[in-house]
Image 1: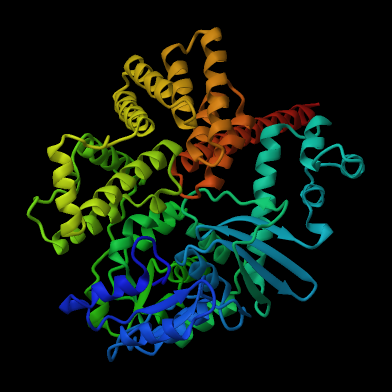
Image 2: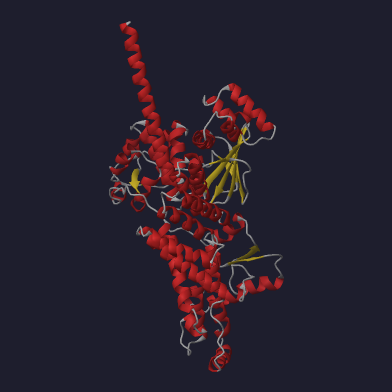
Length: 591
């Protein structure tokens, strides 16, 4: 707990906690921004705090005092998600390291040093988004040359132009008509994946983490599916087979246990149909000794899924069999429902407290005690604190801020008996304060119209949705998502009108400028580009949406569909060429 909390400091909050029987023994470490005084130490000790540190606390400083009081029950298995700031891949294998960073929702850079090779991987919310290597041979142009996608002459010419400051090498190659935009996007993705997957072959590299750091001009990683799928794919492609077999041999008596609660996630990590069938047959009765005798693709699959904790190992057959068989759901999951529920909850709450007095805002009787009012405020503050909506749209953040300020204002006025008396007099004189400022009212009205528009668009009522999005945009013009949805809906209403298409494109581009940190404007602009036949531009937008929000299922789905079509087209081209050469050989044979 931070000592310097607003309204009530940390000491007062902890003192209030001690009034509850269930919280009197709760262990609480304090943190303080600055030097700790003797008076602060004495007050902390009097309240039973277990330590005092600086903020923000280092991981070691935070874990150390808590670890003294947290003791596992006998036989409990402890999950260690915390990753040290430095170490080696012999101590923590790369799949476990990457999974730990994902579980901890790490923001920063992972530095890897493997002899002459050095790599930096940037993580955002636990998902790898960019990778960079120190070797010139691993640059994009070198990759294209090695893969035979460009000639040596084109490579040298593009490198010369790049050094002259004409732009990035990929852009120069497109301008030279060596690659088209779609080929460049696909090559950039494969190049980034190749650099990333190479670290799975490193066994004795040193690693270090740098929180809140960034990789400059790295190769963007855009996973197709759940980010944990990159770990499974890395094990498939490059992880040491000897390491895998050694692990299975050391745990040969353990049973392979399905994690039933995570069954739906199997479809999100990029498993093939053959792999899904094999996983679907697990019932908890197979030991790792049996797995060790399976084909290599099975062993790699199992090790990868164990690394991301979609499978686990049990100590005996009785416990293992209790897990039951895995039932795989092949449908694609989406987490947009969570975002929608947050929007709806805030809008309903804002509407409820509008033009209400302080007692009605906190939903307490006028005869309520200090304790009852404090509990009511704590519940509402927890639901509306704007800090938890930092990743939401600007209109939602504004709405949350307005609601939270209104709740805090009500509590500050009636939290004490003296305050309630004064406020009762004020109510009697009919001098109520305005519950929601004008800006907050506009944000609320805009959000309600936007939600109506989303519902109408889901029901394919595009004309009605366009009207709602237009109203939302008029009430809150600085919200980029409103403008992007308006542009996309305008196209859906007039798909054959070139003039309307141009206007829709302008709205989507303007929405993107206003909300560059949100994935939806990129997604909608990508769909518009796709409808216009601009495949390369569309793929860039979908890739950017997935980079901003790695678990954006809609963007992942669009990228997957586009890649499947590309592979199908390439496959048909190969078939046509084979038929042509077969006929040519037959003609030559007759001659």
